[in-house]
Image (cartoon, rainbow, N blue to C red):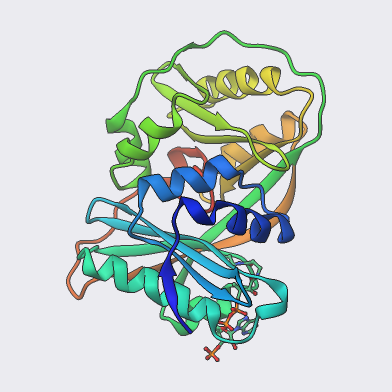
Amino acid sequence: MNVRLLTSADLDGVMLLSREAGWNQTREDWARMMALTPQSCFGIDCDGRVVATATAYCYGSELAWVGMVLTAADYRGRGFARATVQATLDFARSQDVAWIKLDATDMGRPLYEKLGFVAEYAVERWLRPPSPAAAATVEAYRPNPELDLEAFGADRSSLLASLAPIEAASAGGAFALGRPGSKAAYFGPCVSRNMDSTAKLLDWYLSRHAREQVFWDLVEPNPDAFALARTRGFAPVRRLMRMVLRGRAWAPPFVERPELVYALGGFEFG
Ligand SMILES: CC(C)(COP(=O)(O)OP(=O)(O)OC[C@H]1O[C@@H](n2cnc3c(N)ncnc32)[C@H](O)[C@@H]1OP(=O)(O)O)[C@@H](O)C(=O)NCCC(=O)NCCS
């Protein structure tokens, strides 16, 4: 089996795979991932098509995020995911990355456990059906790298800069971004020190997407986010497990404040 790098020539193939699995990623999401990290989007071909993928996005040398781990249903159980995920780990280690994380589905978790990942905390996807939403006044988006670093634990500036032109706003130092999805508009990432600012950013986003389904991914260590989600008509649809693996033998502890993370940037980015 040959694990190879994916390129923009594979966009049709990976979108076919994504759609078969019912994933929310769009062609633009895949194209962005390939542009952001061209050396770590991996795939396996079989019978003339891409049948397995995995990506690793590095936040400097502090953290690598493994995502887009998917094998076409007819090709599962042949070691394809083990091979693509191993390629992401080899890449992360070649970059001397300290920590490697991912958000695992129940199907993916046994593989990650075999590779040495350990569970940290749950993350949940919540869904809001199309419904009216009151608008809120927010400010033009201003990056807040200090707040983001404190909350996420690694420098996400490049990723945030690539997402911000799509849809972004700030409120009292907090910020939220959004992007379209194949199944639902996606609210996140959102980082904030208080509920009031978060509520404004959420209402701003929901009022712009009242006719669509909206996905919002939340982290268990921030119960305020769950409370807010309930008040705006969201309900849980999926539960995943955040998992972590040491990248190199000596690494300083990974310091994050997930209680400030109101919305993930995506299961493929953390
Ligand atoms: C999870 C997924 C990627 C696994 O793909 P795969 O190509 O079938 O996995 P592999 O054949 O490489 O299996 C890797 C190992 O995990 C084990 N494994 C895989 N799925 C398993 C499951 N559901 N339960 C128990 N063990 C499992 C295999 O036995 C294998 O172990 P081994 O290497 O010691 O023999 C695939 O089921 C999938 O695409 N699921 C839907 C999308 C998804 O949930 N992706 C994960 C996102 S975090």
